[in-house]
Amino acid sequence: MRLAVLKDLQAEIDGVAAELRDSCKVGIRANIEGSMRLGIEDGIGQFEAMQAPDFKDLTDVSRNALVKRTFATIDRAAVDFLANYQLQLLGDVTTELASGIHKTITAGVLSGKSIPEVAREIGRVIEDKEAFRKAGKTVFKTAQQRATLIARTETLRAHNEGRKVFYRQVGVTKVQWLTAHDERTCPICRPLDGKVFQIDEVGSVLHPCCRCTLTAVSE
Image 1 (cartoon, rainbow, N blue to C red):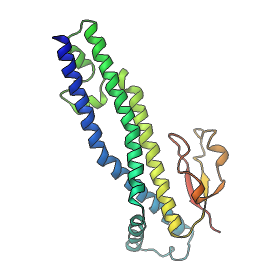
Image 2 (cartoon, helix red, strand yellow; image 1 turned 45 degrees about the horizontal axis):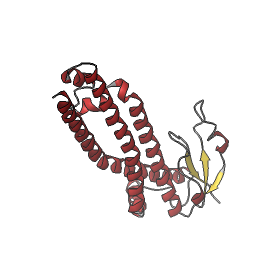
Image 3 (cartoon, helix red, strand yellow; image 1 turned 90 degrees about the horizontal axis):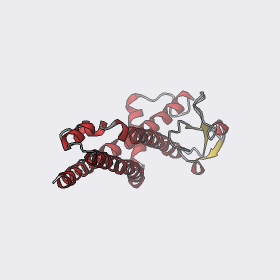
């Protein structure tokens, strides 16, 4: 009887995890598109600050129109790729979460705890999806940190990709790599600070939680 209830509980958890994964798809794509737009806006802002011809007297209307036109040139497959890549990474985390909950439930049942006791320990996962997301500090802590890391990394990747789209649009062929210039700057990125690369030969992030940006180099 207890094993049957356990299986039902695990099936419910898997269902909630699947629903959460599906609901992430729309939000992830919107975040990717928003980050790419911001990257385009930042690129335009750089040219305005440089007082570049055709950019020094942009009005809000013309600037917004330029952002819209530039964004429209983005290959939709590129947006899909970035969104699906992030979803795949987060999907790995979701699988780990579900596995961790299963282990928690099984351990609780085998130790003699009742199903309600185990359910309370993992945050009332059946009744409350928000509680499910935050449930079981021991089970979720590492996975939640990884999910946050993935989201931050992929947001920056999309932002820098947006910049590159704008730069290509206005004929920029070279970009300069800029680090964050603080104590958190890693040994991978620090040596690249200020280096110039061909725009098509440089990535948008180097590692998880990379904070570096790209800026246009005038020729």
